[in-house]
Image 1 (tube, rainbow over the protein chains, first blue to last red):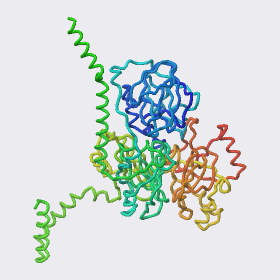
Image 2 (image 1 turned 180 degrees about the vertical axis):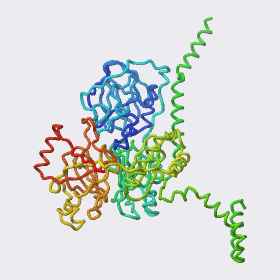
Image 3 (image 1 turned 90 degrees about the vertical axis):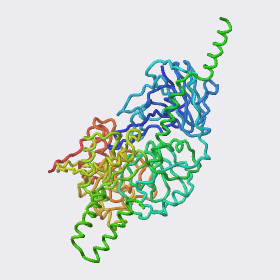
Amino acid sequence: MGIRIIKAGMMTTVQDLGRTGYQSQGFPVAGVMDVRSFQIANLLLDNPENEAVLEFSLIGPTLEFTAGTLIAITGGDFQPTINGEPAPMYTAIDIHKGDVLKFGSARTGSRGYIAFSSYLKIPVVMGSRCTNMKSSIGGFKGRKLQDGDYIGFRIKRRYLPFFLSRTLDIDEFNQEDTVLRVIMGPQDDLFGKQGIDIFLNSEYTVTSDFDRMGCRLEGPYIPRKDTADMISDGIAFGSIQVPAHGKPIILLADRQTTGGYPKIATVASVDIPWLVQRKPDHKIRFKAISVQEAQRLYLEELEELNRMRKRIHQPCREVLECRQVSRRIRRLFP
Amino acid sequence: MNFQTRLRQQKRRDLQRCDQKADYAFLAINILPWTWWQEKGDRPENLMQNNIRILTAGDSSLLIEFGKEISPEINRKIAATVQLMKEQHIEGVVDMIPAFCSLLINYDPRVVRYDKMKKRLESLVRMDIKVGAEKRRIFEIPVVYGGEYGPDLAAIAQHAGLSEAEVINIHSSQDYLIYMLGFLPGFCYLGGLDERIHTPRLANPRLKIRAGSVGIGGSQTGIYPLDSPGGWQLMGMTPVKTYDPDREVPILVEAGNYIRFVPVDEAEYHRIQELVDSGDYQCVIHEEV
């Protein structure tokens, strides 16, 4: 009862919201890159908020189910098929025993997620099921999945009410939208006005050095007032550090806990999902916003997720129409 | 004209009057309360005189900067603040990353917003924090310096204007305080590196550094616990594993301990490595007051 990995794809890992509380000993948080797609996937199946999912990048995996269950696929468009038939995304899908779910390469976006209503059987290590590949802990044996791996399910298939309503709008990850909102600081004062102007008014390109740890950007050199090394300090998700070569690096899920390069700004939480779905050669522009504004946007997004949760718990239009029709028919034959 | 502007004008007028007449009674009644009131109003800045700043690090983190130098006093103060925060159970705090002279606090914006969190931390930082002295625990770390083990030793010596042997001597003749663990599981940030061998980080970080490498980055020295990318200048290699997930205690040392580097030759390195691989190696630990 579980899933067998026929082809592992490029980088398929078990992830959840991350291993917090151990950063003071140097353990990275890890966890999912695109928190929004992750939350939508779990939401579609009424899973707990922090339930483990499979995350894959650029080239998706091929899975065989050895038991029936319900799944939801979110994130970038990896052209999923079930037994050769195209499968819907952002929708709860009924899976039977023996079904083969196959992903291609990413058409739009670069990271995809599969949530399972039967929950993946992965041990909890230090409060989380996420894979931390660098320290080889958590997830499936502390590594990315390989061909032939088998992951069991924790419970049997569950009943989900309003099954037909469980479909949501698909997030489009188009590359025309280049603006990334950032909050300046903590070390923006080291760059002076000139450096900040260049940072905020130039276009940067995502390079191929883009993995779960960080995203290196190419573009105009950002000068610093004082070139002395600074003293290492803690790093937040989405910190933009500028080493001596003057090109920004955005630190992501598998970031180290501390680092010694000055951080000019931090990406707003709501924009990180759109950043991690970009591919090499996409363009990025930075726009500064206040912390209060960023927090307001974050809470608005949570509201949006709540609205989605409400929506999938109502009968869908088709069902309502059927009810109406049946009522009319009943009236015709009293 | 609002109230604040009117008060300011009134104050300026009062001051002018006071200049002309040197009326001390007038000064005592009208000006001194003003200055006192102003001082009281500026209290957060005034009491932050010991260079403590609270900086913004995104929409779910704040960075408390305790100073801009590496000193055992600041470090002990940070440890005490972490302890205090744990005792106070501040609502919304998710994680803390103490560093040399700063403390990063991750919080949940759903539970507590930026302005409230910042005020909370300001009042916390203002509290007097007691700091005590303890016994020193020193771990001996054997290191092979130079050659293929430390490709940047020559660059470090050249930057310092010393011979390689002198650099090794300086580096190994001192005990280093472990200020913090971070960057990688079990990576120790050590303080007290001799100023003569400070060397800037590489402008372009290396993509892979072998576990056990000993290096210098700016005014810091340390050991890489895992294979990883990094920007430090490498000067040697130790066979001892500071982090081993299969060991009963995965992380060998903790913040507040000391490390002493002991130069060894290649033969000794291989002998210790065999012991480490078979799990029989015991790190030499000294206890000093």
